[in-house]
Image (tube, rainbow, N blue to C red):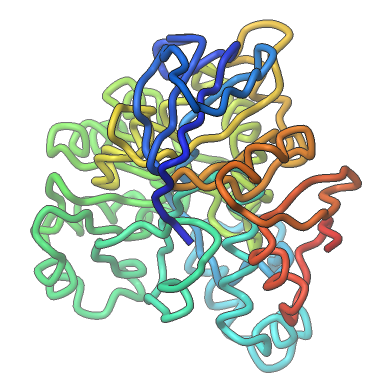
Length: 393
């Protein structure tokens, strides 16, 4: 789905947003890449006046299980002390609870596709999928799926953890669910991982609720990192991780987990993170852009850098501070999502952008609002065996 086009676009009268704040008022996209910031139009350029709208890098969802986003939120106790208890509760009901058996009966390709749609509509143009790779992710998937990386599930379900770590490609991250609990067992897990010699500068732990202050400092000193999923943690454990020191060291990213435990999409997770009052909106912005890109070893993502693929989103003009305005965003508010210079989702007011790049569109409704979706994606969604709730094709 990602291609290069030689039809240059200039977004003018914009507010280009990165972690430093508003850094310009225009952006040139050419051959599927960011060509220049604050660019003046050239002959034959297609100029789009955004009337003060925000232009952001495409967001990065640092942790999702794409194939279980067709599930609803599910648990069997009011509060767990460790996520492993929840896993055992689910496994005991795999063949008996319709809330599990019905979603599991859907084909893997269709389930993965819905996970991709969840991310696309939220402007998460890149997602890290913490499960085995599937051929459906290789062709015509709605968003980029980060790779390469190594992973195991957890200390409880990791198999040969050291072998998994050793097999990870050089220069790639290695990811593990860790300390996803509030009990003594969770508090021991980082040291157990360290004893296995698997806590290094490419290690990414997911959740980290049970980490002690000493262990968080150890993560920082080793150059490791963490992915924070606050809504999932709150749902299962009624608490979440302390990420303030990790965020100050730029060693934490934000992830949604799946709809099996998470609140929804990356904007829902943003609001859950903000509600913990640990980080300011400007700091949270880094967790879904530049910091996530660095932690996941994605050097061409997370910033609108010259030469990088044109993965970007356009949001309505903010009424006040740009970063604070992001807490109000819902997926139907997105005016445009562009991946590799190709517009794939947006408003009818920007239909000319789709046409200029040669993208056929379909009219859809998202949460009751009229939108445009790339025709190939809309067609796939119409024929998917499960729908995306809130989307009418």
